[in-house]
Image 1 (tube, helix red, strand yellow):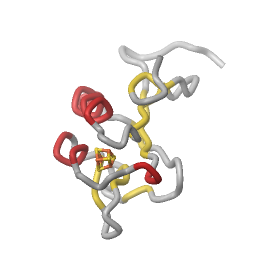
Image 2 (image 1 turned 120 degrees about the vertical axis):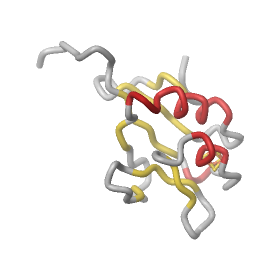
Image 3 (image 1 turned 90 degrees about the horizontal axis):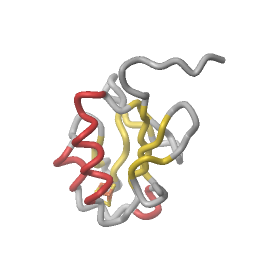
Image 4 (image 1 turned 120 degrees about the horizontal axis):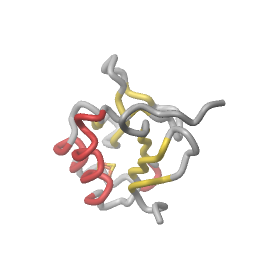
Length: 98
Ligand code: SF4
Protein backbone atom coordinates (compact mmCIF):
# COMPACT_ATOMS: atom_id res chain seq x y z
CA UNK A 1 0.00 0.00 0.00
CA UNK A 2 1.20 3.44 -0.90
CA UNK A 3 0.92 6.15 1.68
CA UNK A 4 0.62 8.88 -0.91
CA UNK A 5 -2.17 11.31 -0.21
CA UNK A 6 -4.00 14.14 -1.84
CA UNK A 7 -3.64 17.68 -0.60
CA UNK A 8 -5.18 16.85 2.78
CA UNK A 9 -5.29 13.64 4.75
CA UNK A 10 -8.67 11.97 4.83
CA UNK A 11 -10.51 12.15 8.14
CA UNK A 12 -13.59 10.39 9.45
CA UNK A 13 -15.82 11.05 12.45
CA UNK A 14 -17.91 8.97 14.81
CA UNK A 15 -19.98 9.60 17.93
CA UNK A 16 -20.08 7.54 21.11
CA UNK A 17 -23.81 7.68 21.80
CA UNK A 18 -23.30 6.23 25.29
CA UNK A 19 -21.93 9.63 26.32
CA UNK A 20 -24.06 11.93 24.18
CA UNK A 21 -26.12 14.41 26.21
CA UNK A 22 -28.40 15.27 23.30
CA UNK A 23 -27.82 19.02 23.59
CA UNK A 24 -27.42 19.35 19.82
CA UNK A 25 -24.34 21.57 19.76
CA UNK A 26 -22.75 19.43 17.05
CA UNK A 27 -25.87 19.80 14.90
CA UNK A 28 -25.63 23.56 15.22
CA UNK A 29 -21.99 23.49 14.06
CA UNK A 30 -22.28 20.98 11.25
CA UNK A 31 -25.84 19.95 10.35
CA UNK A 32 -24.50 18.29 7.19
CA UNK A 33 -22.60 15.77 9.29
CA UNK A 34 -24.54 15.46 12.58
CA UNK A 35 -28.21 14.97 13.31
CA UNK A 36 -30.33 14.28 16.38
CA UNK A 37 -32.50 11.21 15.94
CA UNK A 38 -35.88 10.62 17.60
CA UNK A 39 -34.08 8.90 20.48
CA UNK A 40 -32.62 12.33 21.33
CA UNK A 41 -29.04 11.32 20.57
CA UNK A 42 -26.72 12.61 17.87
CA UNK A 43 -25.55 10.44 14.97
CA UNK A 44 -23.19 10.99 12.08
CA UNK A 45 -24.74 11.38 8.67
CA UNK A 46 -23.38 10.48 5.26
CA UNK A 47 -23.56 12.47 2.05
CA UNK A 48 -26.66 10.39 1.27
CA UNK A 49 -28.38 12.09 4.27
CA UNK A 50 -28.74 8.73 6.02
CA UNK A 51 -27.79 8.42 9.69
CA UNK A 52 -25.19 5.80 10.58
CA UNK A 53 -26.60 4.16 13.69
CA UNK A 54 -24.32 1.18 14.19
CA UNK A 55 -22.09 1.69 17.25
CA UNK A 56 -18.82 3.29 16.18
CA UNK A 57 -20.00 3.89 12.62
CA UNK A 58 -18.05 6.60 10.81
CA UNK A 59 -18.61 9.00 7.93
CA UNK A 60 -15.96 10.88 5.98
CA UNK A 61 -15.33 14.47 7.07
CA UNK A 62 -15.89 16.70 4.01
CA UNK A 63 -12.91 19.03 3.76
CA UNK A 64 -15.01 22.23 3.58
CA UNK A 65 -16.62 21.21 6.88
CA UNK A 66 -13.44 20.27 8.69
CA UNK A 67 -13.35 23.39 10.88
CA UNK A 68 -16.98 22.94 11.88
CA UNK A 69 -16.50 19.27 12.70
CA UNK A 70 -13.31 20.04 14.64
CA UNK A 71 -15.10 22.73 16.65
CA UNK A 72 -17.95 20.31 17.34
CA UNK A 73 -15.50 17.82 18.80
CA UNK A 74 -13.91 20.53 20.93
CA UNK A 75 -17.19 21.91 22.24
CA UNK A 76 -19.08 18.62 22.67
CA UNK A 77 -20.13 18.50 26.35
CA UNK A 78 -20.23 14.71 26.30
CA UNK A 79 -16.69 14.53 24.91
CA UNK A 80 -17.99 11.88 22.58
CA UNK A 81 -17.18 13.15 19.07
CA UNK A 82 -14.11 11.42 17.68
CA UNK A 83 -12.33 12.63 14.54
CA UNK A 84 -9.61 10.36 13.27
CA UNK A 85 -7.31 9.82 10.30
CA UNK A 86 -8.63 7.20 7.94
CA UNK A 87 -5.14 5.96 7.14
CA UNK A 88 -4.09 4.84 10.62
CA UNK A 89 -7.21 5.52 12.75
CA UNK A 90 -5.29 7.98 14.91
CA UNK A 91 -7.64 10.39 16.67
CA UNK A 92 -6.81 13.99 15.74
CA UNK A 93 -9.69 15.80 17.48
CA UNK A 94 -11.70 14.52 20.41
CA UNK A 95 -11.18 13.08 23.88
CA UNK A 96 -8.59 10.54 22.74
CA UNK A 97 -6.48 12.98 20.69
CA UNK A 98 -2.97 13.51 22.05
S1 SF4 B 1 -22.35 17.95 20.91
FE1 SF4 B 1 -21.78 15.92 21.70
S2 SF4 B 1 -23.12 15.57 23.48
FE2 SF4 B 1 -24.00 17.24 22.25
S3 SF4 B 1 -25.49 16.25 20.89
FE3 SF4 B 1 -23.54 16.40 19.78
S4 SF4 B 1 -22.49 14.45 20.18
FE4 SF4 B 1 -24.13 14.65 21.70
